Amino acid sequence: MPPERRAHRERLALRGALLRLTPPLEVLAEEVLGLVSRIDLVARDPDGAVTLVLVAGAGADLARLGEGIAQRVWLAPRLADWNQLAPHLGLAAERGVRLLLVAPHFDERTRAAADALGPDLVRLAERLPRGDLDVELHLLEAQGGDSNPVLLAPARRDGGFRSGLRD
Image (cartoon, rainbow, N blue to C red; front, side, top):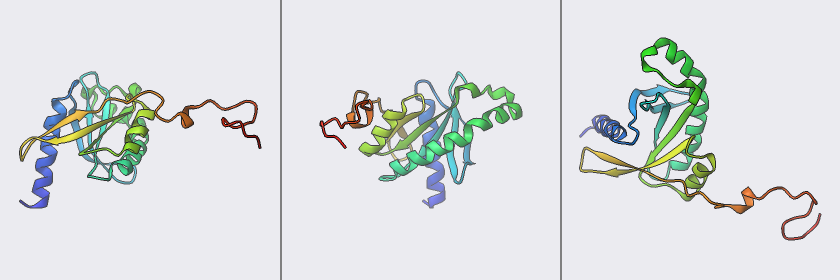
């Protein structure tokens, strides 16, 4: 099968998998020219919240997370314009834009970064093949907790280090 046809079939399979999520995500646009690259999909949930969907290949998830955060910032102020052009979509511009990053597997750094940003901004979904022409998305839950106490520790007021050392 030619690569462009395979890419089209994979995109159709992803659209179907998005509709099977809870809540389902309806695709509004594909291959949207974003900040400096294309956004794979832009979708909305039944309440009008907008989700930007980026697909990452194996090993590219951390870089795509960074790109997705930048694309969120680029897309959010444009939602009011989209509502003006297509008011029937009922986009909830005031809720901002969520990123859904889809990949076959996620690096621990990607998971930690997504956890730090929180599920209202970033969600991760593992893409699981279901036959040749279909995929299933498994949404990953935030790991929570103090996964990195160094980053989460409050600043010391006495000027010393946590170990007790001084300048």
